Length: 411
Image 1 (cartoon, rainbow, N blue to C red):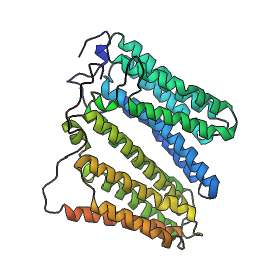
Image 2 (cartoon, one colour):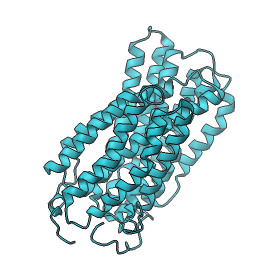
Image 3 (cartoon, rainbow, N blue to C red):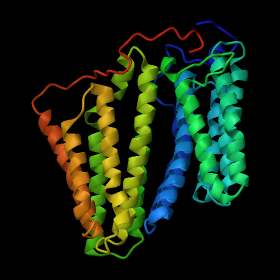
Image 4 (cartoon, helix red, strand yellow):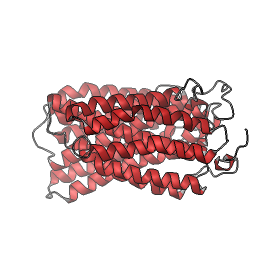
């Protein structure tokens, strides 16, 4: 690697692979942000038709914007030394912008659109320029110099969407976010610099795996917070106590299925991969869906604990069944990323959940929540039985097995 003026910012071979306390502090902003996302989903519980579709679209867009900010920050701290003052300033600055986004999020599609958009653009446009300036003559600065023009190109869409008519906000922001994710996927190609795809980046695999695991646990923590807040704020009844218990068991099962054993071996898979950047990028996408699935499932807790034997509403099944089903879809993908196979038990669970939807429409919400928990328990049991009396498996990821290409010293 070419040593430039900013080479001291890069992670060294002796740098700790563990997440720093600053990064855990940074995550506190996202603890709050995820509760706001979950609440926006919960507010859709009584919607139907087009209002439900647009409401889901708006909330998903806001979540994906937050996820992109968190993901970029995680890759920065996986590639640069988090103990350096400049990187710490960047992380703290990003934390403040993320907190502004979280505060604006409940009304980000209404009167708080401008602060949400400006905070997002500060992270996406200004931060890479700061990193490029800090790296000075180092070749890796060209990665940041690619990102800034792509982000600046979508800035008008974000700003016009924030300042223009409400009905244009969703399509304009959706187009802007699609370009931001496309740039991330393609490596922000520019005519005079080419592309720097994430798959070829040099990263601290242990660090990236730990950060993904931590974000999943943060989402689970948000679900536990929902269980406690809702149950403590409603009148006591046997039905609500039962719903409280089933909700807690569901979160435990999500934790169990995630970590056993693919989630637990993510670190090993990244360390063994010949192209950890490719596997890390794939894992990032999978964990976005995993985190989203936990947030959606947490909404079902709020709805069911409040009215466990209330009137059956088809919309509620989007959360009661949709959350666990989305989790199993993402978990199937994680199984492939770690072991190169499809889990039969998870596939069985997904099929059973989807087949049960028609029957659950006629039953109270408590029955749907219990059925979803039962399917997750079946998946956990089948996986435990499959591995019984067998030696523990090691990762065998098919992603990144080939030798990485020559991405140059800027990677």
